[in-house]
Length: 389
Image (cartoon, rainbow, N blue to C red):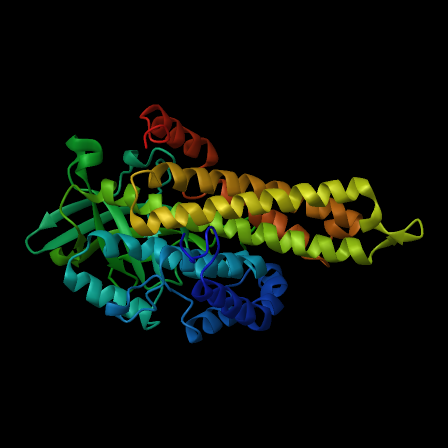
């Protein structure tokens, strides 16, 4: 039998978790409430993550990055989300936005844009959704027309995370309207490109520290070599990307759920009623137990999905959707219950659990609603993905 740990983090992965937690306890968590209250970008967290090379840990070493595997990236995002979900969108969206380049871009694109991301020269956002193309992403109307050695892009992208803050954008656009999904291509657009502008920040329920804005493309001319992959491959690249990055949303969900559970546990041990700690009441113990049990189940599913992401397993599509769906449902339940543990105090902004509850909700919505995740899983199950050895 092997001496390697079975279903346990390696020493290296555990060290990464400890390092990220140390950074977050010192430089992310102290600003989380203020970032939420002021609905501003978490500049303190961004600087701390960049300084410690946790801002885009997935970038391969050959392009100047930390070269973190999928599990290590998940650990980074989980730990940041435990302190501040808005801040966890820095490494999460940097992966989402740049992964198309990493998966399908030319070597020149990888060197230029992954290198710039690793060096901290700008973040990377992902432009898929549109006003009339949410879950039905193939209905997008943004167009790209070839003119000589350039592509000219026109359209509007909606719900773009960190829009305006990021320097680089992966943009999906229709290059052949007659081919539907096979007529969509992917491009890298820069914030500085003429014709790029942004809408006002959305006024959101949660993740208020991460700007969500529309991106307007008005006759944006870009060199032809900024196409990611081949013409017509964009939609397939976009879906492959989401297979991997849904695991990072699961990590966010696990992180915020763990943060809420940690706070609820400490509160329950300190709060005195009827002459003793409320943690001594069995009814509350059962509530806390269910919270802990479900957080750990979500964590294990997320780590299993991360392993499949790293290996590129055939069942990644199922596991990515399952981890995202399950973990986000758990995060919503656990954060609501954390508010309940604190009672009236939990309902006030003086305590962090109401922020965690508001932040958790988005994990059930973005990168595909949980209803869409169940459609994805059903198709995979019916195709035999879980039944075949």
